[in-house]
Length: 220
Image (cartoon, rainbow, N blue to C red):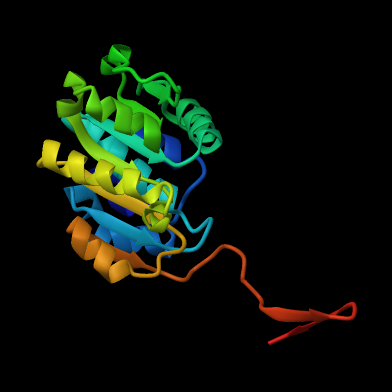
């Protein structure tokens, strides 16, 4: 699918930015669009690293911001990853979307976030914001959960599960986009999230498997 084929479905500002680097959508992106990504459907995207999961989130998120005047929350497990996403999104969309980073250890409501469109937050910080009943949460139209397979992590999984449960309860019409390269039970998780399941094995660089022994690698 050519990017130009969805030109009328995404904001013009977003299309003008994306067309500088993209002419054709990757397989997982095509599947997501065809399954209702741009119509507000929840999505669980299970595809390899570098297969285009982030752009799926960007397409839906920017549509929410520019066409519905809604906020987008991008939840990540690590502060370093949050900082990386913040820099990337601010550089890419900062000319028309207000991007904020919320990863501090201080347990507070951070009322200044009410003035921002796209908020990148760590799992723990988002938990804090929910517990403080931030009034701006009612304006959130899309929640992206990166590395959602951490639901199975004994240390951080419970916090993420509670996060998702509370956000779905607070925001009845929110679009949930869950992203991961490795999920052991995708069908069960998609069912729990009431989400379309997008699975694809395409990757930009072919993966070869082999065994290393005594200085040599024997590939399958």
